[in-house]
Amino acid sequence: MKFNNIIFSDVWFNDKLSAWIEHYSFAFFLVEMLRPKTFVELGTHTGGSYFAFCQTIKTLQIKTKAYAVDTWQGDEHSGIYGEDVFKQVNQTNQENFAHFSTLLKTTFDNAGQHFENGSIDLLHIDGLHTYEAGKHDFERWLPKMSDTAVMIFHDTAVKFEDFGVWKLMEELRQKYPYFEFEHGFGLGILCTGSKINQDFLNFVNSANANDDIKNLFSSIGRKNLLEYQQKQQTEQIRILTDNLDLLTLTIKLKDEVNNMLRQKNELQKQQSDTKIKSLENELFAHISTIENLENQIKIQEKLVPEISDSLLRKTTSPLHKLRTFLKLNYFKLLKQKRLIERSELYDKQYYLQNNPDVKSSGMSAIKHYLLFGGFEGRKPSKKFDSAFYLQQNPDVKASGMNPLVHYILHGQKENRQIIPLLK
Image (cartoon, rainbow, N blue to C red; front, side, top):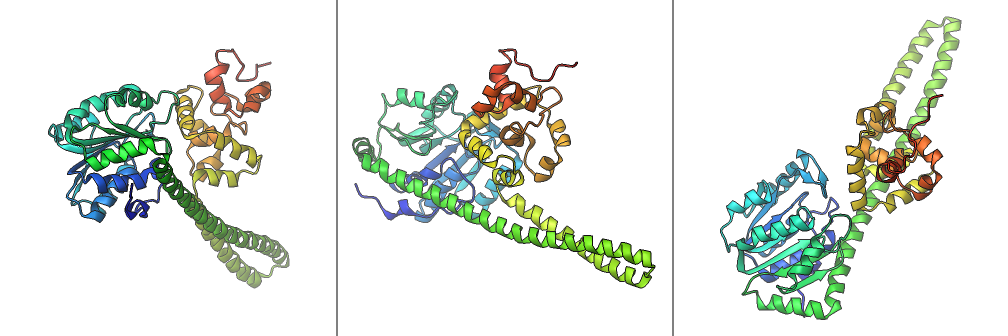
C-alpha cells in the first residue's frame, strides 16, 4: 500500500503534550483518504487531536465542516480544569480555522441536536473512557453517521482501573470492519458505514494482515513524541542555564551588600556622614538590582514544568523522587490525586500555610504533596503525620507509595496509626 508524504508533515500546534501526539500522522492520512464533508470530535480538551485534523483540512483545502464538542471542564479521567483551557483552544481556532471549524461548548448528548441523522462522515470519540460512557456515546451518535462513515476511539489499549473502551471495541469489532493501533494508548478505527470508501477498506484489511503498517505509524508517532520531548528539554536547559547566570550574579551582589553593611557600621563608628550617604546610595542600588534579578528568576522558573522545578528546588534524595515520579504513570497519578482530594485528611490551606516554599513555587499543593511532600514527611493536614506514618511503616516507605495514598487504600483497613499518641 502506498502512502503520501502528508503523513510525515510537521504538526502546526505541538507546544503542549497531548496523549494523541503519536497519532497525528494517522489523522493526516485519515482526512486525506476519507475527505469527509462533516467531521466531529467528542472530547477536545487542549485541541491536540482536533487541530491535527483541522490542519489537514486546511492544507488540502477540503470542503469539510469540523465541530469540536466539549464542556471544557474536564472529567474524572482527564482531570478537572479551568476556563483558560477553552480560551486557548478558542483563540487557536479563531486565528486559524474559524472559516470551517466550530467549537460547541456543551455536553455530548446536548450537541447531538445540532446534527441530522446520517450527516457525519468522520467521528472521533475521546470522552470519558469507561465502558458504560463509551457505549452510551456510540449508541447515541451511531444514527448520526452517514453511510460512508468511520468512527475512531482513543485509549483502546488502556486497561487500567475503570477504563473500558477496550471492552467496547471487543464487542463492536464483531459487527463492523475494525483495525487498532496499540501505540499511543491505543486507537480503534471502526467502519460503521455500509458504503465505506473502498480504498480505506483495503487499508483496514491490509493493516490487519500486515504489521508493517502498524510499525510505520508507530514509528512516526514515536518520532513526533521524541522531537517534542527534545524540544521541551532544550528549552528547559536554556531557561535553567539563564537562571544559573542570574543566581550567580545575585549571590555576588548579596556578598557585596553584606560587605557594604559592614563598611557602613564601621563608618558610623567613625561618624563619617558623607561616606555613609554615598555608601547607602550604592547599597540601595544593589538591593534594587537583586530584587529585579530574583523576579526574573521567578518568572523563568514558571516556564519550567512543575516537576522539573520542584526537583531542582529540593536537594534531599532527588533521584529517589524522580524514580517515584516515573513509576506513577499518568492514569495512576490522576487516580491517586482524586483519592487525596476527597480525603478529610488533606487540607489544602493547611499545607500551603505550613509550606511557604510550595506556595511561592507556583506548584499546586495537591501535586506537590503527592509527588514530593509525602515522601519528605510533610503533613497534608493536622490529622495526618506523613513522617510518623513512614517511620512506623517501613514497608510503606520501601513500596514508594505516597503515605496518605497508602493509608486511604490499605492502612485504614489495617488500623495503622496516623499520628503519634499523646503521652
